[in-house]
Length: 256
Image (cartoon, rainbow, N blue to C red):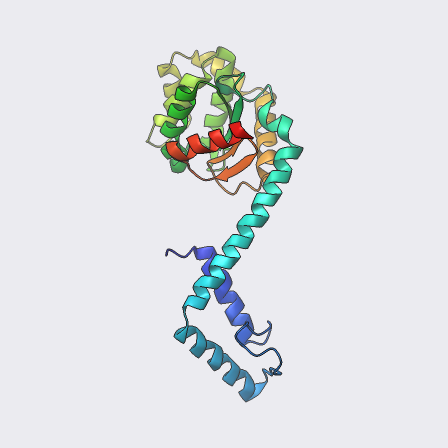
């Protein structure tokens, strides 16, 4: 099993606290016996912890799995609350570009960054599933978290919506695998038939920067920790998804 680095660090910190006498004894220590951690007793207690973990390394795995499960459950509960609280902002914001069927019976909301490799990896699956289903509304929430080029690309994508070119530009940006900068972004815009001079004017509209700020606030409320992240119906889905997983999530949302 591949152990997440964050969880491993957490367990090691806890173990260090135990040895230093700053945490309660683990479950395998007899709770009815007093535990002292001064001087020689502290060293002996630390050695017993070390020896036990060396002899039973599966305890660490079990602890990390339990911690991960608890963190995921807490995150899911908070996300569910946020989805209910901000349902209108997520699914019906008129300033958010929409692909697929605007009147679809299931809404998929995607938070993405045009420089995110995982967003690009998920892009073909999202596009194909939405197109094949025909009854899915896809709401785009630009979340530029990877630097200035990401911010420029997000502003350009929002501005392209004024020329009814968002979908074409979005697809071109997601399909591009090189390094983005302002010049390259504008070249890509031109390649899909966008009036670049008008695009640049529209990108200066303060309203677009406000949209990005609102997207960031929504992402924070959902505890989005990276891109991509999805809301499918009432379910929060962090990370890239493949076509089969997305289809299943849509069907679950459709069933209620």
